[in-house]
Amino acid sequence: MDVVNNSSTKQQWPAGRSAIWIGICALISLYVIILAVELALRVRFPWDLYFWPESPFLTNMMKLNQHLPVYTAPADGNSFVYSPGLEYLTYALLKPFGLQLDIRFCRLINVLLGVIGAGCAALAMSRLSRSTTSMGKTRLFFFVSWGIVLLVLFKNFLAEIPHPDTIHTLHALLVFWLCLAALETKRFRLAIITMAVAGVGVLTKQTEALCLLGPAVVFAIFNPWGWRRWTLLMAVGGAVFGISLYLLWLPQYGRFFTFYLPSHQGISLRKLYTLTFDLLSMHGGILLFLGVIAGFCLWSARNESRRYLACWISIGFFTVLPNLAAYLKAMGTWNNLCIFEVWLILIVWPFFCMLLDSLALVEPKPEKMVEGWNRQVIPWSLCLLTIFLVLLLLPTKMPPQSGHYKYCQTIDEALRRDIQANRKVLVSHGSEFLIRAGVKEAPLDRANSITELNTANLGAMAEMKLRIQQHYYDRIYLLVGSWYGEKILEEIKQNYTLESVVASPPYKVRAAFGFQDLMEDCRIFIPKRKD
Image (cartoon, rainbow, N blue to C red):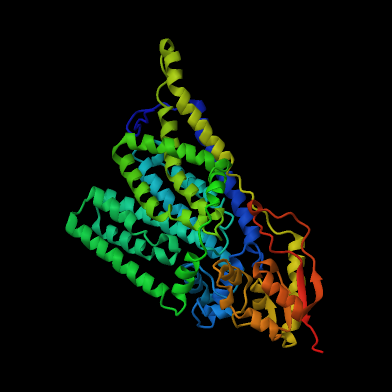
């Protein structure tokens, strides 16, 4: 199937096809408005109990607020396994306003990173489409492209949650846009900036450690500045990468938590089976199908399209594909596949616009009507499939209900009383409870950290068991207790007695609706009396 470059062809847009373009722009705009309302209602929830990354993230922010490294001794059981770029950036932006420990503003920063990332994607797609399609020259195309990337990006259930996925996606899209712009403008300074930005990838997420190789390969293939300057670009990228890795591993336990621990959690080959279903979800399967066709057609279109596709493949290979390892890891979930969907829309959306533009050519003469319709069956089918894809991007995240607020307020009030009574309290998951009660020190024995250690068979490094045996805590607020493992739960049972229970909210839990089953029955334990 040929995709014709129609940017210089005088076209007559039939009313029906104009209506399709206007309609799909209106639909995307409507969905973006719905998404904005959903996010506004969700971001303002003042507790860190949507998904698992929020509590470890706030624990790290508490460490930074106390001028401590984010990676501390495994015995403390309170360090996270991801690169800390998001924590550093969020802390730097919010500290001047005293909001660095407010989960609401931490979420807002993450949302803004997603918006900026979608903007980078729109800039890249506009670079291609303004030379290949008629609508690509308009501002409307840019904003609609921005909107559709936003919709795909926020299909990730962690998109607005303080988790490396969004900053990882932003970084990959920024490098893609910079690389494409440097290649098209042949500005060497822009190429230097591209390599420098790519070099910090390891600070966003470990799977982006090889990001600088993506633009390096592109610059080597097209070689617009010669090999000496290419060598200089590699030196710049390598130097920035070396500095970034040094800063990542500068804390005493940085290498342990970002490399040693994840590498010892193992790869689950059983996930190769679930990969098919997670990758080929309703809109994901359509994106993959359209992406394969778009790739072949963009390659055959030559010139700008082939250059765009080369950047897309090379940078995607070194920044997106490694996320498969994160998915296959024992602790990995399908959020690691969402960046693949964002990457696919980078070629699917321009391809759709090229198809729609090719269908806007002058209608065939009556005697050639049958032949014309036969040639248009496949393009029309692909256009309709893309429209169906857009329909599936309806945002589905739900705001918290009154029961969620009541549940957290009940825990808040009980915990505040304990803190005011100078009791030592363990909240297994949920750092905002402690922050709102006035606790400054980073909490120990986080459920998420213990389960990460247990998965790597390193749970004995944490000293939580000893603290439980010594009745170190005056109160234990137990959420997601199963994450501690049977041994810790047995120690709690032997050394503590159940005092009360805060019942979980009566709502169904689904990741697609924006909730993980963290707000379960909160069991409050007190030490057993010694005989």
